Length: 158
Image (cartoon, rainbow, N blue to C red):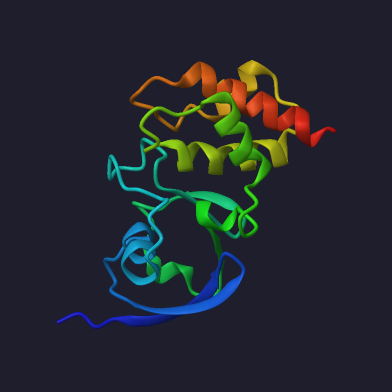
């Protein structure tokens, strides 16, 4: 019988701990232990980006990564971007551009966009498309998603 292990880490700037099983993914842990449902498992193979979270400021596929390895890290989820009722500027841009239909993939796109804009504050349209290639929208809201990234980038520049 496999036994759980206690891990301690920061989740959206708050110190937390969880007893996780060796096979438990980050998405399973976030949902099961913390009731955070923004990162969603869709493909289960790390190909769609719906499960993207930031671990120590790097985008990670939460469906493939094991929760055991979060011990001592800092995890940021889509829920951790807003400041109370005030949405993050990227979240606001996605709403303004209507960059979603069903919304299932939206958290993954927003988390990837946050990283893109940190690395490339004024990305070209080709850079946006290239960076977001690993995140899939089954509703095909791609033009609106690209527009949302452009809006967020422009606002960040003032």
